[in-house]
Image (cartoon, rainbow, N blue to C red; front, side, top):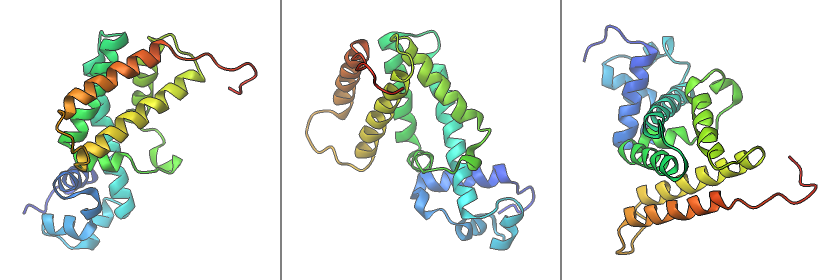
Length: 195
């Protein structure tokens, strides 16, 4: 293994590859050091520790999936944008399960401060939902509905929990049809409801 040229970006990419192959929980500084043929201690000049490394993998995943979604939804609106957004999200998660799992971890605000990928993700989500005529706080509620639906579906699919003979992709498409109808018919807020 080549030892020269180690840096945080190179370590993060290698950790992301390890996560996709073996799971994010199997990513360790020792395994990464072995991969590069160096001692564990030499990694600390590039990353602060295992938590820092995993956060870096999560942020990388966030940037990658956001870039994919941005391309998918460009020039689309309404149901076309929803389906393009959802399909890009699902495909990324299925192709990069370890990175995706890392991106679902809970972050401390200081760990993700200034993350362009996370900010762009919020902008894309809210932009797509504004196409349904939603405004805050409904935007936030709808964004949470989409995230929980997409994540729940993908998590179950990745774990092999869908055992019925019906094709998983067909159920995904019907679920997106239902989400589209829900977004088009978003219920009005109750009078006096907090924002």
